[in-house]
Image 1 (spheres, chains in turn cyan, red):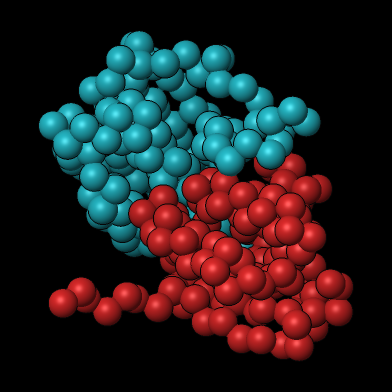
Image 2: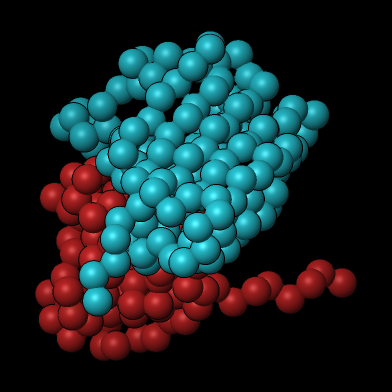
Length: 141
Length: 119
């Protein structure tokens, strides 16, 4: 595979179709980097959840607020940083969606999925900055 | 004149069961789940369907946005004395249901034929 890492920075408005564009670009880079289908699915899911959180909850769908994305794809791992212009949040304040009293709630599962599908996720600043990474799995033929 | 509504669901009736297949493979993300959700609820609220089987065989990607819609659909059908069953879910997507423990709340069956006989 191509050993040169791919890295890019993008700025998008708080628009879900723009988020889709970012996902598509990253998926292309992961495919070019010969990440496994499983890894690509996991990363796409985490990105979807994180970008939607940034747009809907961070930026409150304000079209004047932006989301800053920087990512890199290497032969070892995928890294991404997503920054929104919102007031931030404390991840510890998000209730556990798997608790019996929360199971029937229609939302609140994004962070759980990100944690489970990526190797690590961290929040910085006011909580409006998220970084996460996924170690590239070696495909077994 | 309004633009034609894009078809997102393929709906068939198998006896008294409404079988739904999804048209797009990369669906059930935040952007299009609202419209898909509207179409699903229309089946129940406007057309009075009580037994709904969702076949996910064509679905390659799903995010948490879809889970909320499925929970609400399940609750709605349950309140009407109906039932929702999901089938044909890929291993990757099934993991989403398992991690969120929704596989304990929603009825998930592997094969469509088995699901049709499970109402």
